[in-house]
Length: 472
Image (cartoon, rainbow, N blue to C red; front, side):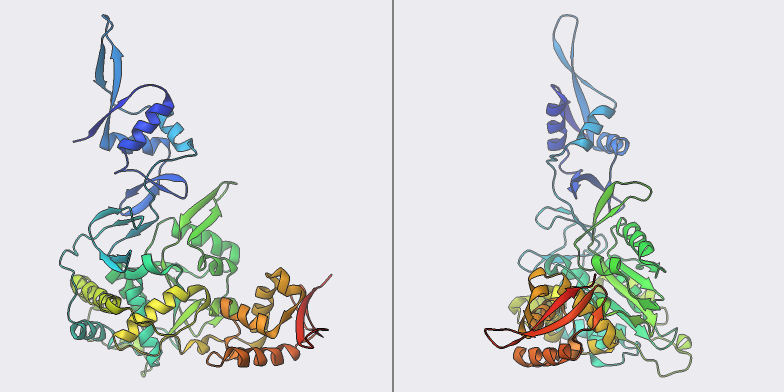
């Protein structure tokens, strides 16, 4: 039964009344009025707002009788002008909605959250239908279920399997970890299981296959494709069949919780939440330095000439995942739940993704999956790309552009997660700075883009310093 709402007074009074009465059916996202439709965040215009309100509320108008008495009369619809005023209002008093999850998640103080509907503390809508039986299980059983699922994927190394497990648990810890990197699944040939592995993550967390897009040919097309994809509020996205992973727009998206772009064919900007878990797949793709530091590699190496013809233990593995989704969700949740009891953290480093890297690596290690982040060297690009990545990041720091010690630049590289091969990830900071100083010394006067690398000696400390000189 719809909730009656008395509309009287000015438009401002009526809007306040509607906003108060509609707090269970309308939300605010990026400053816009939205609703949840088909488990997606849907921005409403005046027409859709009219329709949505009448589905949940009954407007009551105050009318005067001939004798001067006031009577309450139900109306058939909300006035369009009132709805447009609500759309145009700058201060919108509605609950904040940023995420749609199609599985239980951990939020707050690493507590599981699984009740269907809106959760104001997490700014999230949860669709957990069909997952009523999800509950923690014995850790050994959880690992057995996960290992059984992954047993037929030809992981090239221990780290690749560990990264696959980290990918599986990531959808369940999204509210806790901020920015997330891209899981890049590579193989030497088609049919190795790259797309299937990403699909499995989507089927477990979402109950449906991942949203797939292809790798565009230019960055402007990348930007448009990212915008159209994120407008669907996806949980898992796969960029399939990558040959060359190099896109400033994708790099920006992977370091932004909200993605802002202009509407196609207009000058209006829109902002949409970027809460997706991103995957990429390709046969031995090239990866730019800018993208390499935003990726987690999962390498598959089949031991047969035609890997696409091999049989899986579960013959129709996608059907198996759907039929056993609740059990697989329980297994993933168990890995997180067991770690969250004590929260022992492993020591890893990953720049912008530090929060995610620490949590996901620690969850995996607690369950016995080791080697997290140890195979990232396979994504290293040529020396020129590494140097350009360094100069690009350096140029964004006005103070360091004029004068920087090797220690200053080492700290910057650590924060931006670049020059891993040159600096040596396992060395002490002073040793990394020494290696970086020697490397830059070999590139003095070299031009990278709009900048020339310069070197000098500090007159007070007698220490070698570096700077960037703008090329006219």
